[in-house]
Image (cartoon, rainbow, N blue to C red; front, side, top):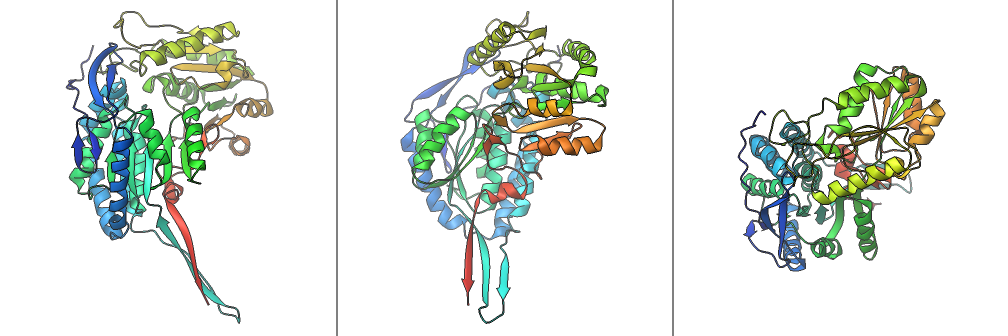
Length: 487
């Protein structure tokens, strides 16, 4: 065992209404559970509708000032925030492990991305511009467009990567001139607490950003509030459906980054020495498989199917499950026991549906009996139309399916309701682009190209939601376009 040396002390959590720190909330408290032991390790205050109302009203007051702050000043503050995130890399790493049991080796890699997302949108703050159109005939006119902020943005983030989600949403909203009220998951409050501390330290005016872990009622109050002009949400389709029903009453727009069932198409000319480890470890050895864009369905051409199964099975034997603070650990527990029980139920039903279990399938031995640890699990011969072939697992489970032709691979890949990401492994450039065009997903990554890069739009279709995060499109989600014309 190689102990990382991080302090395991849980920090206090507060409700942050602007610069105000509240130790109690009207919705009571939430007992945070250490997923390594199943024991309560912290008590989290929960905001209710009353605190949400206070935060939104303060954000509206702050917006009336923030929208007129010089773009160069917004840029300066965001760059300062990015520097502070980078300077606190070790503490964010520590809090990621505390939040959800993420292995410290994975957690340490997230802070660099969060810093880059913040710096990228800092650079946009003073480059926002409209378009000019002129016509000088008898009926000529002069017209131009303005890219204006919405106002208060309601932000609801998920638990699997709180810092990543915060920096994908908050910096572009602020760069565009909006203010933000964030409701992080009560299951993962520690990174969000530090983020709120650094917003204050960077010098943002009070009310520009508020961070309040809260109840379900708090989330509903944020979505319903008439002063909230737009919602950005990361989570599951069921919650997104409720958000859309609420938004519809006020014709309120939303950005929805939801789940995925992403296909990874491995053709027989792929570089298997690279493609198989990438496609296996991305799913099974990263955040315990709890990622929306992971390539959880590996579609393999029949001529290399048996070889692929052998390679995958050998790789899984080397994945180390254990204490997330141990630097020799690849994956820690899943987020809580409820998640572990749900995933084990899907594994059992997959066996009943005829899928062939080739690795894992249960709980690993020798770990804390109260922990929510699962073995990395691989199924072969998965029916594309079965539960395992159609439903998001959000755990360390890989499904492998054979295909004969390019057309069949595309058909299987497109057979789910989800459409977040897709992946192709082939040396044939023409095939890569031909197949990518036909895959029904918000993004297609070829031969290991990384996903979630700040300079590119990220977002899905179908049950994976709509709207974009990343790139200029991510900034545009927080701008209203107004046309002005005169003759």
